[in-house]
Image (cartoon, rainbow, N blue to C red; front, side):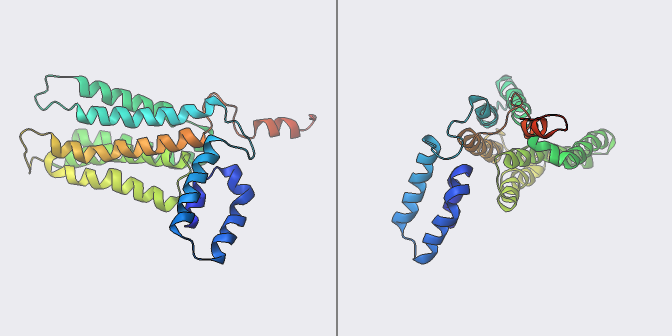
Length: 245
């Protein structure tokens, strides 16, 4: 029940979270209490009255980009043409990767610069090794490299959406790694389906769904975009030596 309080905006939680949790501890919460919390959370986002009441429209942009990444990924998956006569799936896939690229950069990522560089380095190494390794090792490495990229991008989006570490790992493993492991037999040619459609599509759809969920969360909560000033810039300018408010 206390987890439902996390649905409220941060400004609301900073002011009321401790008080609400104390009330929940005083008696056994009912289903009506849970429903009231969910409805109240929706209202708090739609009609914010605590802290910064108005979220700048620029802070909706990352969420819209993440939402577009999920939608176009699902479109690419649904549009898969086993005959190869249509390039529509590739077009949607390219748009999805572009939306990911637009939606991920932000001031929040600076604190994770080393981890991001390490993942980028592993991806580069995987691309090189996949080119020279013998089959089927090259196939496994290629799949692992793609999964590493997709998992890293999804994890970074989850960090931006302020998803806790436990839920973030569950999201990445459940929506990226598990479906990828299920695809390895197809990639190695151990299992053949004609046409190669529904099975692979349904294994890839959860990944797009995860991006849509994160996008909706970011649109509602807002997140610093690349057009917003970096966090703390205003404070740094005010408190810098020789400057005053």
